[in-house]
Amino acid sequence: MQSLYANGFEIIYDEMYQTFIDYEDEFVFYSALLNQYQKKQVLEIGCGSGNLARFFIDNNYTYCGLDYSADMINLCRDKNSKGNFILGDMTQFSLKNKTESILITGRTSSYLLSNKDIFGCLKSIHQNLKPGGLLCFDFIDANRFFKEIKGGKEVKHTAVFDQKKYERISFFNTNTSENLMFNWDSKYYEHTQGKIKLIVEDRSEVRAFTKNEWELYLHLNNFEMVEFIDRKSYAFDTYMVVAKKI
Ligand SMILES: C[S@@+](CC[C@H](N)C(=O)[O-])C[C@H]1O[C@@H](n2cnc3c(N)ncnc32)[C@H](O)[C@@H]1O
Image 1 (cartoon, rainbow, N blue to C red):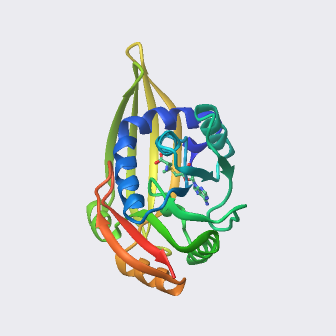
Image 2 (image 1 turned 45 degrees about the vertical axis):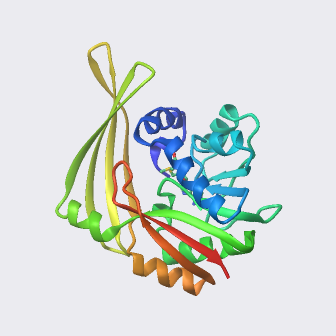
């Protein structure tokens, strides 16, 4: 698990990502889609610190958030007293009640490192969706991103939140030992009173995908592919996938 997802660092994640991602804009996107398919029940996989959750809850969706990090789930509960949040693993989960739609948000699909993980995840989603249920998720597009980071690339992101200034220096490099993986080494800094302090370091191996891969994975797991939506996110070339349970 990435260092920023637990052990108190989830608070820093929460603050930094509110400046990286426009969660209201994310909600506008997802709610338009759910509206189009007349879905009012949502499971959000990889709900993180619950920044998107609050929009679903405030807009009267029957919402449930699922995440692998107990610290993220506790933070979600603190921030959203009316929300329903469960600790779980997207590669193997079971809900008490089936839902009309499932979203995997914020490129959480990048943590499906093996094909076994993907098949486990799609099987769990299929079992927990009602007939005709909707699946929507985003993924990092290997075709574009790998060309950008080939040979290694350093990228700096700055976040100013509540008078605190954070900086993240990332180093990306391709790592095709298995699938279309890449290494993401990052250092997080806080600027206080003119000084820069290293808060945490992380070394992760994450996964990007091609559209063809997802077409096949979805077909093999009894989903009808509806569309790919090209939607650049703050740091990555990203596609959204819209699919329906068959
Ligand atoms: C990049 S964050 C995205 C969080 C949130 N969607 C957002 O946009 O702020 C990825 C999240 O996925 C969660 N995660 C990673 N692997 C998971 C798994 N196997 N099952 C469920 N959640 C997982 C992490 O704990 C983390 O909160």
